[in-house]
Length: 170
Image (tube, rainbow, N blue to C red; front, side, top):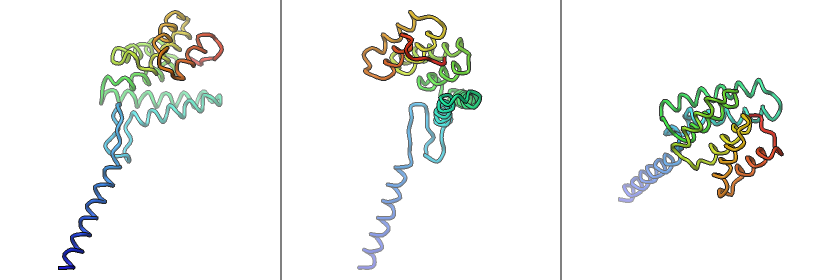
């Protein structure tokens, strides 16, 4: 009888620990992360590439930055095909497109994202930056107005860019 109890206890512990472990491997994102943390979604890979591009850009390594932005853009396009019309994906599609110098299509991505989520903080900031670079300050101020109540750094950043105290490299 004692052997059966011990065996049952061990089996139960093994099953519980397996279930606990598997619960920790799931990861979620509004833009569609894969079901396990070992396989990164195109969206997650794109965000990582954008982070690297920004680091290169700060160091003045424009060519390396542009390669990262291009890679991120390709991944975001794939992500958007798999899971269309996600505001976060459209935000980064607008961002990478703008960073690569295509302001017209960057603006289209941002505006499409705002149709889905009008108060999206990132889209409003980045679209405002695009408006400043394309010399449409009144439209940039409209984006700033949307961010006014967010109590966020995006508001402060866009305000500085509009006032000309912070430089934006498009």
